[in-house]
Length: 87
Image (cartoon, rainbow, N blue to C red; front, side, top):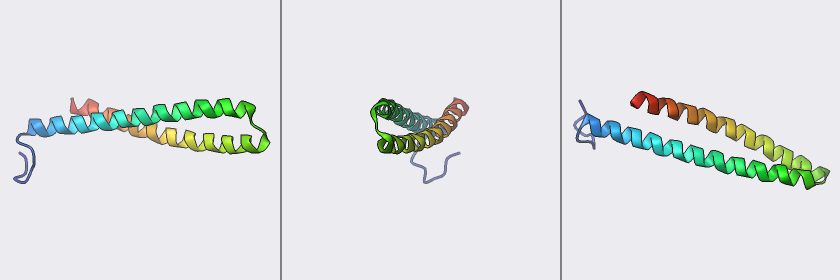
């Protein structure tokens, strides 16, 4: 039973909206992961041509991107689990 102040007309509508929101969030995470992969690819290319100081800065940025990527993969996994449980 939905609360009286619920914006949904039925439990099915509420479930659909929850699934839709999760699906959209998952799409956003995947897009961000793709963006990170492209940046990492460019940085690896730049690293081959960099002097020592620039190489150190690029390596530091790659490390930060790796940490962000790991966090996004955890979020992605949670969203995928949520979608599986909603189906």
